[in-house]
Image 1: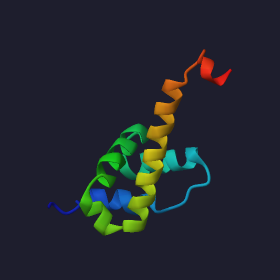
Image 2: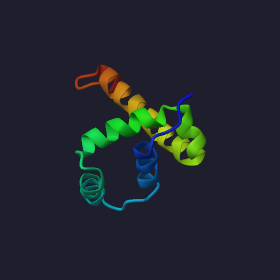
Image 3: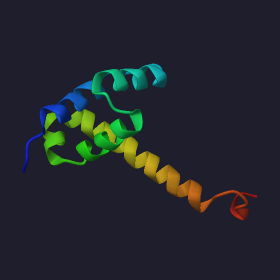
Length: 89
């Protein structure tokens, strides 16, 4: 099993901060990492899938995984009950 890189650890450390405004976080992502927020969140998704990330910060990674899983479930539900779905009538 491969350990986390310094870059991966820095993303997890950054993610530990609580942000009140999404725009402030997005600006900090661009300034800190030099990548777009979309690319940052793709990196984050890959990182939190690693066992090494779970060992690095179990509470943070479990929380992020729960949030990711909830978003995925929500998107799936929205697709199944899209516009014009008669089950909601």
